[in-house]
Length: 317
Image 1 (tube, rainbow, N blue to C red):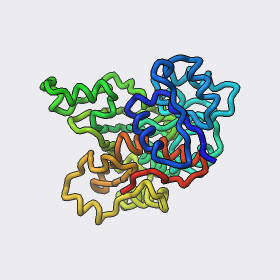
Image 2 (cartoon, rainbow, N blue to C red; image 1 turned 90 degrees about the vertical axis):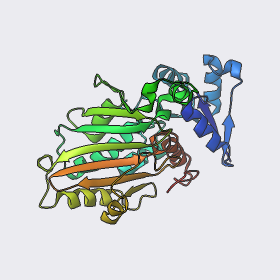
Image 3 (tube, one colour; image 1 turned 60 degrees about the vertical axis):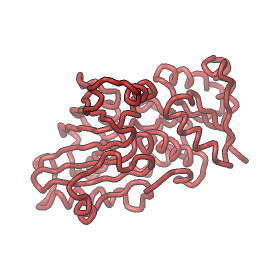
């Protein structure tokens, strides 16, 4: 029997991508509201109470409201906003992090989809903290290069306008006050004692993301060959994953000395790289901010919640 899915806020970038993918599937039935009712609380409440799973593609305040509207129903909630990523009682939707993360998604009623920048940082840092290579008290920094689609409809319109600001042709750093909304989950999920310094940069390409965490040798609890030890720790952690691939030395050599942030645009996979040398390392996660950083991650979680094949409907490299 097909599961009934309601996408609350499907007119946003993430919601539309999820809707378009689910519309092609035979194992789900999509519940939609007329345009005049899609923002009405009572109409949304009724839809949520009819659905097996409600996917929230809303601003934080509206997502919290939808969570409240679900009270008294059997509907499971999959939230793509920032609202519940560190909230008690919510599973964090990154199944590759651990068996317990996966089981919480499979069996939990409330699941929060990770943030895009946070996904890259956590994919790199969490396994190293868990295995003891990287102390939890580490003072880390991170920079991230992203396509403009991550800014939503307004930013997409700005970048794709026939006449636009000259500044948009240049990469632009933002989050200048170190108050970016992904910082709490970056610290919390990795088990760090402090939030990292985080410098996100948006550039003139539609989608794709490249998150980099630089490390000095002295920051690691390692032996003679930090580069190999870190790469092997990540390789072992993600061994068998169909979604996340850890680059080998051969992959590094084939890159030609450049890494394009948009190389996985349109895909739901993620690539992790350990670059540099034994004294100064660069940990890099490359993926699509709209894929593993957003709608692809949501679909992966939904598949697990429904008991479907985890990679059903995903576009993988």
